[in-house]
Length: 102
Image 1: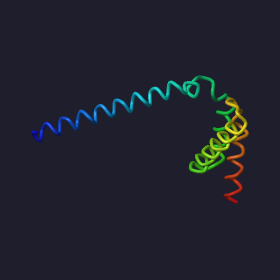
Image 2: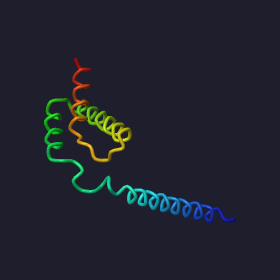
Image 3: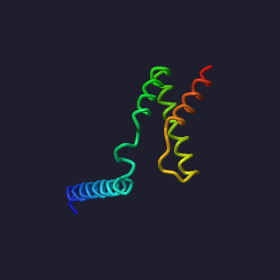
Image 4: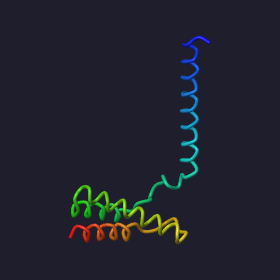
């Protein structure tokens, strides 16, 4: 087999695998369409996130939001609920980080 033919076959395999990966991801996104629908975060959540961002430093705010998402995810899984208010979890994440700072 010619060396260039091997390169061509390898390139086609990469192209096919990338296409199959993208198709798989697209199907998964379509299955979890409810995660990307409108009205998932209320206006009060947005205002509270803005105020907490002003209170905490840049990295602390991101850590607080990360903790909030973890707490909300654990609660959603344990309570078998898909719609929960996010402000209590944001408050919990912010309070934990404020207590850790002091």
